[in-house]
Image (cartoon, rainbow, N blue to C red; front, side):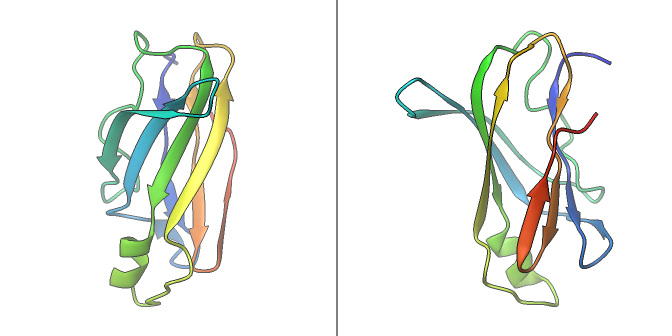
Length: 116
């Protein structure tokens, strides 16, 4: 598998993909300042149409994905207003490897992991 950064969002309360979630990728410098590198919106499969980082863009460093879930939930049947933005901060140590960072979402919480 190519060295890329990808993500997807699953809504565990609906047992399926979360469509229409805006995802922003930022790189953090040593002072914690963030530079936005990419963004996109999840499709009907809960995935972005393109990788957040391509093989040529992969670099070691600290990154943050921001999942803007507030609008998603306000449009949903639950109408939950608890979560607005879910930040996931992680480190890419081996830029020649594939990094997949999924978000498992529910109205009252979330979890993430390094996927394959």
